[in-house]
Length: 289
Length: 278
Image (cartoon, rainbow over all chains, first blue to last red):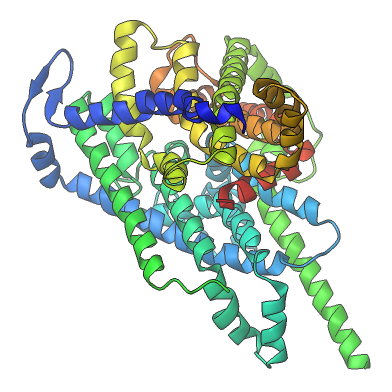
């Protein structure tokens, strides 16, 4: 009927063409580069040498583990906290849209500015956090420069900035649960805890999976600025993640081949993570009501 | 009865306290940047923190005295604005087509778009760094714009798709029956109706580009540095000037926050519904 329908694929063409040439093609090129030494003026095929180098590089493994630690911890905390806040907000009250605005704020502040703010707040001698701790008689630690505390401090920054995303996403999910289902369970005498465990949680499964997948993809790739502004991967390699290490390898040590191999490993880790999350949920997926 | 009503009061007070705590935590680091920026140099970093002080614009004056600040403001604005407009121009027809017409494997396509978020920026940027250096796009506004468009298109299509699906098809159909051409329908009916959606997606894209750090760090040099890179380079001095840094951070954040105040509803709808409507 609509004659535009004939050309429906034509409308998609610019977007697809653009994405292929600006995202997919470059990644394939990086994949190719990962099998060569690519540095200043050299470009030579070396087979798996970059990958075998990584296999023997302890810093690489440290960065890989740090990345997984960061993503798993941050996403898990954000999910639990976000769910709790979403449940709290899932009712009508006055000033809701203002509260939502406050919740929205952390997500739209530039990551560099967030890093800056927390660097100041975390400052061991002059920062506000340690000052407040002092008031209750605790001597605050050196948050960003203690080996075992640096990564949790980074995770806390991520939690501050991205829990709101979980809240908004899960809140949207909660609104899809039919009121009648909740009412029915309540009439049957379900306690709040059981209501949550046997009604809300199963019905929210899809939303939880989407939230985890979205957040994890972002956390794997886009925590660069916060780390760069606060610890730059230190102390030692305590907060060195794969994006940071790959960046340094490529643009400071000028080893493009090796950095390419590293970023391909990162890519496959992300793909594996997303696949595992989606799989594990699909098998146990409940029938929709 | 009395105990029940008093329990209700306790509950609602608790609820309000919790809400306030959430809002406070959410806003506090931003508030801290804003107030620190206004502190006189002696009070910027000191323990105990000074809560009462005479606000001054000294820190802002230091920032404004930096050479090239105007250029970097211009760079950030031009790049973010052009990228958002191009994103809208490309994403709107694609989203319309996905929303209205039958296609094979449409869901896969939509998911594929979003799965592009899995591609690590660092994997994408290495070839661009090499290529841009060869063809002279390194340290150019165009080079960064082209990449920002690529990064933001998937979410834009996805969000617009959500908005367009909500629009009633009946209007378009009746216009077609009345003899309007399909292009006219698209431009005169669908486009105005999706103005809110377009505005929300445009603003979201603008904010993303305005805030972006990684690509800008790698692909810009002296001439096209954007504000986030400028902020970072500010920190590498031996003596970190916290006050001016905070002033610059304020200047970067304030416009975004003002935007979000006016468009909060659309932004939230965009972030949540758009991401969930399949």
